[in-house]
Image (cartoon, rainbow, N blue to C red):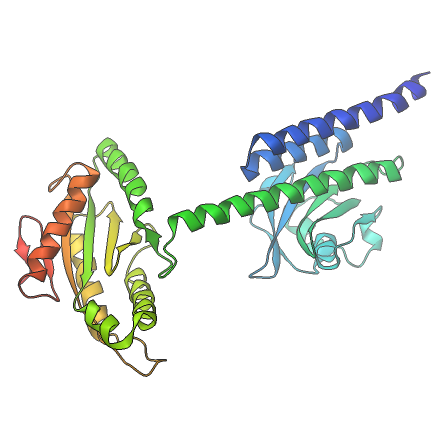
Length: 349
């Protein structure tokens, strides 16, 4: 009777898990909570010693541990596998599931993982997360009881992998759409719409923690003449190259925006006025030293008028900080051009 009861309970358990995973997929577009739900259900059903989700890093042709749970989880967080290395690497490379009852008898097993984690792997079940014609990652279960592992369990685990693949694809699609809404097509920098969102956050954060931040407003000198002489395609190419030069002078925490037309804005978090002036001078000097549109045989040299303002000394709201930096840029534009105007200090000598 007990065996029959156990047999009857399993389909109910599977249906319940499918329902919860489907609910997670339809209630959120965020990847992490969905994958956490899937991995939690895998653990409840199969009870492995360790289990993990490895994602494919296509640029480096490697696998990394996106989620790792169990006693060896901390030790594997920074480990990476080459595509084709170990059981997981083989599954990612070939796109086929693999059940290994005894890893000591399988030459594909990567012994260095156990050597690093001080863990003893005995058996592995590993399945690919497939999307169309590529593998996004793999789910790996370590040291589960295999004597009752039937086609039914394999089908169930494959279905969970399909759910995980759908979640990853959906999250990446949403991420791509979000990138498109905040990115300027021509330069690849952030657009003006995103500037106001970032500024709101930066004003709040800086007010709360008593930080300064500095804004540089950049307007290209005589850009219209380039468009008139060489056409708008060259003008767009020039803007893209200038955007790259500006971005190359910034830290990872800094922001660069195309404000519109031939105007750019740079936002420097946790940066004083003097520090911001150093960055503005670097950008100015880089523009002076650069020749643009070389591939087109033009070797253009473009300069810029810049205005600099700092929160909270010069302004205390997002609109005010933009207006202050913009006003200083116009002081330069109407006098020397190719220079920097600093709020409360004037045009740099």
